Image (cartoon, rainbow, N blue to C red; front, side, top):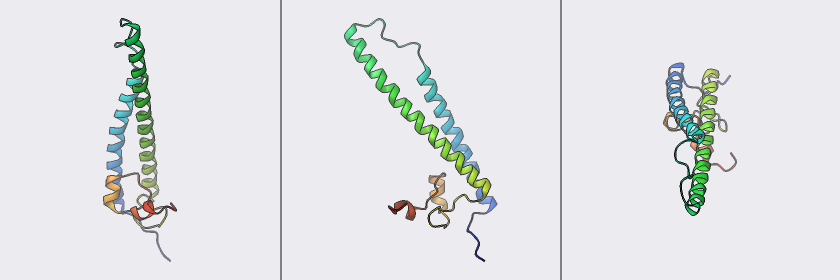
Length: 126
């Protein structure tokens, strides 16, 4: 009977703490981006000439769209990190979903939500 490789409970706890820290940081940035999107006071174009008003409104629209994209990426990142926490609870964290081998710790420290080892990630079939 072969057993599936897995990280020890101590190693999983180390990764859990790393992920919780990353979630906290990512959530703070997400909250800041959302607050920026909701901000309607202050720098409006009410007192500028029509030409500058149009240009400034266009720039504001582009900036808001970029901020919205960043906020969405943060939201997705947080979701991936939370899924990694579930894998830790299931004791499947750090196992490559393509090869079944353990993902190296160095990769997991750099990309804690990784589900593929570098070998599988670089394989176009995955």
